[in-house]
Length: 356
Length: 257
Ligand SMILES: Nc1ncnc2c1ncn2[C@@H]1O[C@H](COP(=O)(O)OP(=O)(O)OP(=O)(O)O)[C@@H](O)[C@H]1O
Ligand SMILES: [Mg+2]
Image (cartoon, rainbow over all chains, first blue to last red; front, side, top):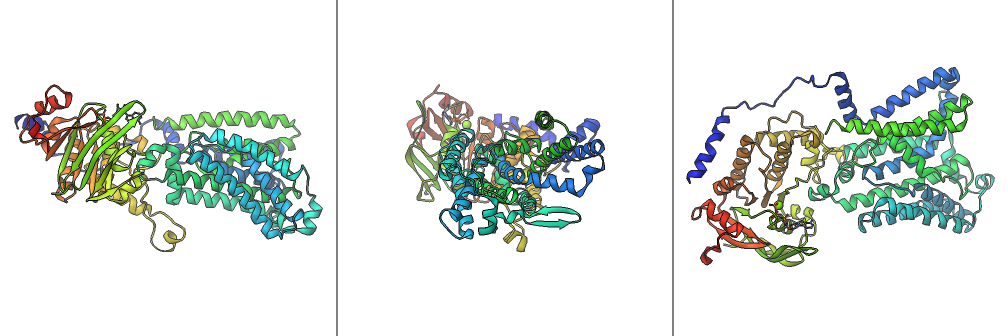
């Protein structure tokens, strides 16, 4: 066919080309451009820098007291619950979702653990299992509504938050279980409060659990197929589906895991505050989202690292303690955290421009 | 000869739009079948209906004589059908290697892979690099760069490389050269011939008539949601084909295969 040969002629011009991988000198945008690229590849670097900078800053303002093992202990202890919940929140936000019910699930799980022991006389091991199961079931419901009913995560978890919170008050009849009673009857409930001495600092099992959880999830997200799928689903669910990812299964696994982690947070909370009360932890959802955002995880999904969320939680802890040691009004903490949130989102947008 | 992939009476409606209107389809072993048609004729919907990406409202699909009902692209993939979708289906923030192995990742041998489920990054990267080199995609410098940092054509190249590397029974290419440069298009056409020589049949959707007439064994002309006719590129000119698909000319009845 004549049109055909005429059509392929121009292609021969490229026949003796150079078959090696192209290399260019990387002088593009100077130092700023390189920084932008490095941050794009290591999303947890920004919160880490902010964390170190804020520790140094408060160290200079507050003095030697801030570097004491005591202060570090205090920060870690205060951060542990938010840190655990933020791990759950990170998973959900990486899939471009959001979980407003984390705090409520956490509290309900701890209340169930307490009620099982104190109202029904069930052995404490079984009671804890029941509490964990309740968190898991809440996660299944969230996941099913998001993955299979295709409802927006914000709405699903907003509803779940109210439902779980109300069930929690109705079920517990607003009663608090006293710390002393727990210590006498079911000390296993407070196991996360167990203290260790590490070089002058006092760590609790809860703190260790938080760190272990974050590092395990970080490994799973980076080095397993499941982790890659979580990112792919958050990035573009349609593309993920077409390229062979079980999108529904991945979403289910994330919400179920989130519910279960929140139940563990509920258990850890008993260790932290000693008693079981249906009224605590009301701000856990907002605090966990704050940690995640300051930690550089994109609310649009698919970008960020769970280590960042841990750094985010620690940044909040450092600000809170630092300002308190300086004797500042607690409102200053909120004001500065607010600024940090907005700055974090601005930095996120800037880093993302590398790809644009 | 029996068709390797066969569709009969396929119907797909999107609300009031009928994308597939009692459409028939046949792909024979070892052939390159081109599918041509106007924009919106329903070509992409047709291949999605046979690759599990959409579930047809009516009609049946047979693979190697066995009736199949895919409800997800994963099932089609498990049956050896590999597709490059028009939208490419890649996760922008993930790397080239991650994207090529999405849903079929390689794990490290031994304890790390078996119990800790650790991915074998090095093996996946090497494989991805080799496949891209085969396609002549030398302008990609870093196999770990995020797909969103690639040009449109490079992305398309990666998607084609992925399908060619893993397809074992049927490879479907929905406009694989639309964004490619001259040299890269040529490589894709060579790759198509290469895949054919391995005995794997290919469905090629394209608006590029010279490409279609160069590689196709048969041409399926799609019009208004159904197969209008199937023509042999040796007996018809490009202007015939264009006239059929735009409705300017009716095909002779005998041409339908
Ligand atoms: N997801 C969808 N929702 C609604 N309508 C759709 C959807 N996908 C396709 N359609 C409609 O179905 C018809 C056929 O679309 P299809 O994508 O199959 O065409 P095509 O032949 O591939 O066109 P092109 O050459 O432009 O790629 C169009 O009218 C389109 O508007
Ligand atoms: Mg199309």
